[in-house]
Image 1 (cartoon, rainbow, N blue to C red):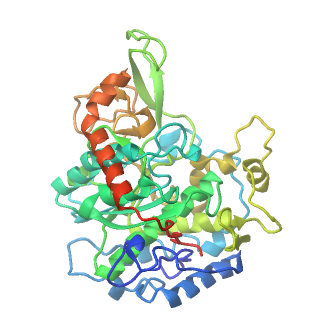
Image 2 (cartoon, helix red, strand yellow):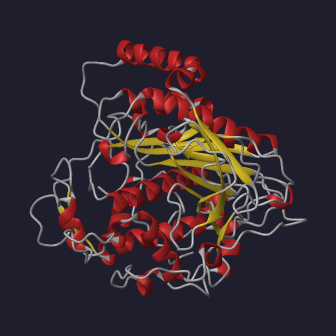
Length: 485
């Protein structure tokens, strides 16, 4: 994997990994220079950071020595991916082409471009899982871009992560390590909540101000994913451990029930980028309903959407594969950009810009018309992710899949829609709940009912907020620097 461009580095001390515990906090950077984010400059960022982050050993080369641990029965992802990817997939410079995301991909239905992973009898046993949390942490209401963040959202979401991901993985015999990067308000309880809630399982975290680099949503999302993948990679190098599988998840993803995808024939294959099937509702004419989704109880059938696009909240895969996918996507998003480190926010700008761009300006930059009623796919995460997977030829090479054991809205949804609860469906282990054959029935929890179900977590969030107020100092929150600068 020597062709990987390492766009981000994390400054760490050998003895400590959480950047917020380092002397001087996550900052200590007084960079005032302007850096052109071309492919050459991206390599320059890595080289400059390598000189500063001497604790990071072997990242650029991906040597076996840097990630060695006692041998297991799982083939090393590095060696496998060098063979399966190195000679077949385009290098970053070969995919750094002009963005052209207007065309939909995967004609013939969503499952054509993202086939279901088949059962894998006799597959090599997974031994370790890295849960990588990204994006805006603690989203309480509305969209993440509205920045309404609370400790309660962090605790309720984290509780669902433990029940839905961590406990099933541990029951399957996997060691679980958690990594977190967040966009969050400096000095807020949200950062404190993320660092405290996951306990000893949290192997590394770093938090940055919302809008630090850009408020363009897709680029912000990819920046966060790339950074949390670097946190996981650095931990593996420092501790000489291997993470067999990564599960990349939005902070505000809420798991309604366990995802049992870590052992046996249904275990996720690390050698593919695996996402959740994108399903939508098909009404059942004979089923009693109570009208709209916001009233009472109703039933429907779930079927794959007829178009393409990726669910932009959950991804499985081996570390090197996910790094390659998201690193090259980030390169496409920022190639030719200017990084002005003297700014507090909006440091990442297209050439010639003198101030952070508005959303409309970002749309124009990516070739879209802000005045048009047509969706601008170049600034829509679903289509940008799909377009890049298509550009890299992942589906054509059998490296883009979906998994029948992670159904959106059944296994998980977003925190803001957690009050819609689907009944458990008792079907065979090989059933696919998104094939239009199994009725799914849901009801909406009343506010009082939802609050009662979360009362203990609400109380814990209040205790955590009180602790935060007691322990925080009068000093300003250290300026977090997790990646670009």
